[in-house]
Image 1 (cartoon, rainbow, N blue to C red):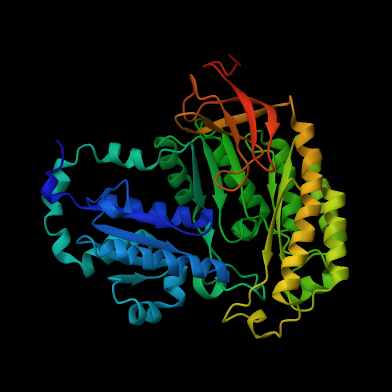
Image 2 (image 1 turned 60 degrees about the vertical axis):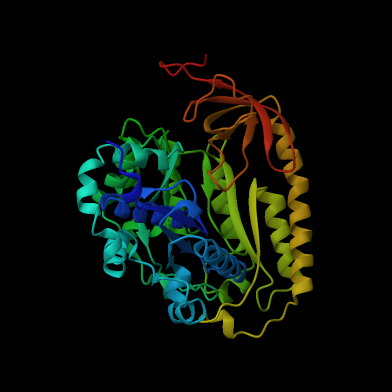
Length: 449
């Protein structure tokens, strides 16, 4: 039975930041749907607009503030409740309440699964009619499936971090490292599979630290791979340490693990890494990524912070040496921005903004030159791939070597293709990052059609 239009209560979640926040938003959505709210297709059509925020770096904070202010304008056009949640809310709750009074509710990290409870306490009148409405929502599960229309899902395995990197505000916002129990991770995975996910991306602030024992993380990954409908497992955010060396052995053994290694080094200069309170060195990283290269057809993603206090041109030369040697297919470059509440935020800056931009452009141009050769090597080559999205004029296909919502995609002819199809894509051309190709789906026997 369709819910009476006049009683319909809906929500929309705007998610900012990284895939870890997507997993948190899914927990919020699940909480709200259990209470009888339904997902809206647009923020402006919803009764409750929740913004899951990010404040990891200055640009993320600026984007968060801009998003909230734009949401305030939308709110004024209709009788809507505006809720700000997540990292920015955890960091600046009083400032939000004082400076943006149009925000109706603020709650921080660690409360995503209690979103409905928090909303009910704040807006009891909006929930008073929902008990009866819940009885009419026999199709609520179908409404939920509309929300999860991607063939992949980000599943959180832990929250918080114990690393204490000098530049990072996350431990102050998320607290110390906390494992999610294997049962909860498997439960979330099964739910994602029921909603159509074939690829499971394991995310956290420090995935490699799960269980504080690599064998425990290995067991979790193997248990997930035992779920028949899970076709691809992608562990993300693997801190580059000795545990990661050990985990790479599993990449060779478990064929469901994507040929993809994502490990954020943040720098290669041992001097800079020490001031960042991180481990590693150029020789260590070379050894780690060379081991990853032993896995057939694997591609690498890493990230580097440029312009950290004390960084010199010689440190940049080490980064160029790393790129020349390892040739990472995906490279994220961030300009250092001091964060209030971190040790690095108290350090005097030694690299000007202009010099940071110059160094980033130098490294990016150097990497793009290497990427041209990488792209040329992909032409006329076939890769295992999955169909992520179908638009009117094109299908968005993704090789197993690329993470969803992060890396490059392959644009293909959409005829006869469906979201979630798995097969192979043959690369025919490329732009700076993305590619074009032809997709060949598997049949029910797993053979190419």
